[in-house]
Image (cartoon, rainbow, N blue to C red; front, top):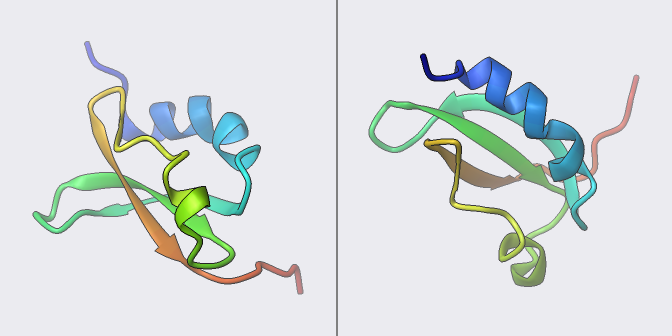
Length: 72
């Protein structure tokens, strides 16, 4: 059985958050309406984007610029 997207996100989240510019990792939908791992970047930086894989364990990875995340 393949791992659920939640399991894959949880497994890879620590390493994704170590990448420069990455501020969040979540789950959302891609352009076709399929579940995808959503990686949030602090700013639109091409050098940061190229470090993020297009897929992880068969799930597509989408990059969104979300800005700096601050706890409230």
